[in-house]
Image (tube, rainbow over all chains, first blue to last red; front, side, top):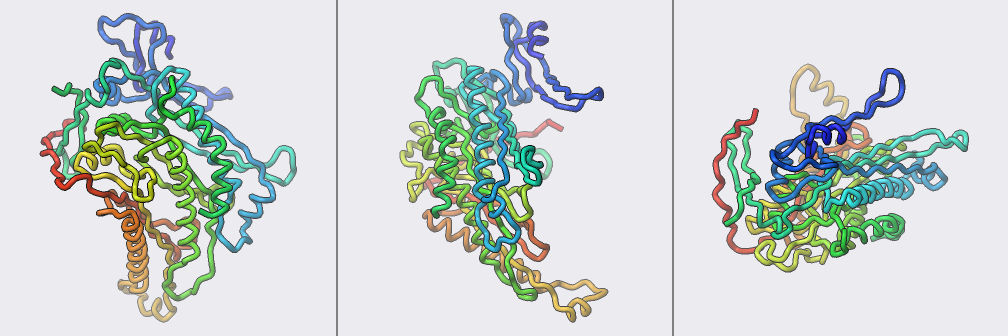
Length: 202
Length: 278
């Protein structure tokens, strides 16, 4: 997708959707779909940026002095064998309520590691930070390969986001951002809130 | 904190601290991670706070049944305690990370419960948020953002609400939780037959709901008073049945305790906008 965008003379891709679906002939198809954009008169770039942000979000970021760099992902998979301690702690016969430390550890490790992978991905893309879209944790229970009758637990944590970086380092970004209180005149459900606008402060 | 919590924390801390030391600001090439959307990120920046990193804590807890009377409305203390302990463990672990980052507070905190797929009576309690640090001059030059327990503040407010709160001259102190697990008595057979074929209020259930709510609300008030708060905002009221039977329910109240930063709380006059979308 990035190659295609570069061939079109795009400087970046917005609204990227990443999808994984089973392919009829077997296997999985991974697809990335987005819109290549270019600033008029801008020089062509070798590697366009990618982001999952909508057009609105992209504009807000630009006006505040930030630019997306790339989609950043943190994925971590952890497996823990069901051993005596977790089996005992989680057995239904148990009469008191307590923490099941084995499971806590598995899930915490998976999430922490996903967060670490995300951070490394941001560093790799030379972003200065990341705004996230979603965090997902999937846990599964399956039969242990090595030991019959026993089970293993698997936790898979995924964090997806967009790495961003600042341009125009000469002034702090907060000074360039102006927010105003708005009262929406939309439907009855319209509520008061903040809007972000990009006007420079005097 | 109990010994078990210490042990758990030690095991978890090992990997997490390495990640946090990398996130710690000041190092060259350090980046921030966050759990904020674009608008939230920009508004938090606008309020004078810099995101430092994504912080999280969780605890998998066994929240089984306990024996209770069939026909009496009553609180199930054992479960109430179990749930608050589990949430406290998750929150404490998350706060430990925030402190290790040198944060002034945590915004956009989500305290969720998810059914655990291993075993029937387990649930995972997760706290996820973004640790932030105040820039000089934030909130009218406020220096100390920690609360009276010298912990970084925590808040379940979104970036938008957080920004509105700071601009109106209030500061979050901490996220407060009040919860109560209640057993709703089953009706006597006579009552069931008496009500057959007509619509009537089931007084016992109504009373149980009132009692459960009162207990949860009084607990959240106690928590807010302990933080010397002026009030609680951003309240969410929820009712969970977790994995229990239909007559056992948890009433849960979550909010952010706040204190005033200054005496006047003038907010700017909002501009009227007509949204032309959809």
